Image (cartoon, rainbow, N blue to C red; front, side):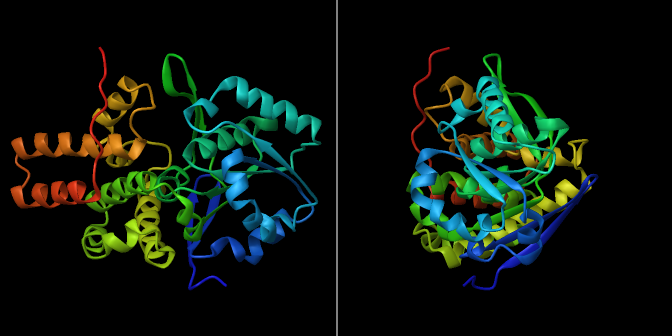
Length: 313
């Protein structure tokens, strides 16, 4: 049974996204979502690793589908490729995909980006559902409707805004995360706390050991608070007009570090952690109160950054 799930709603120009968050949330996805999937063909985009670890958790959701097909993709940024997207479109056509079909993104941020892009392009756009399995995806990548694939010339070069019909953040799935992957997600939690939800900083300071231990019940309210704060920003600026730039705190240098490391030496959240340290140093020089900067720097250090990888330029 889900322990006190939190239900949120993100309103956007094309409708609304239901968001359910909690330990065990996937076991009770909600009657409205189950009804919306009833009698439809569902395509589950996932990786072999996530499928092996968590496929059984999908049963309550997939029982409503008329038929379902699992489409495996590679792990990591390599999945966000136009050729892989085209292969998924062809497999969906061969699998009987129609305008009323549904894509289910079941994995981390790269799977969500790819699956959302595929759903947005298939037959000019079909419904999709996000079921993020990493902390970073639950608090950031799955929320906001941004989808994309990469080109050799740049990350997220080809994409579109396509909001999911629903997002289910089940914090029990985070129990299998690599500790470094969990820390990566915590940097995005810290980011949203710094820009929009100051109470999150206090939570991080108080219960960081429980979060690092992947306690599903400790993580659930943290994920809920981070998602609520991001959803507020997205609702005010659904397609990156101006306000949404707040969400880029730490990302300017972070993206550069990711690029220099070939998207393999640093996790995204780790790169953002270093980017926040850089931005805070600049902000101090421009008048940010020392106590504010010192508090954020202390939290970044407490979460723990890995050494920077060597890079040749």
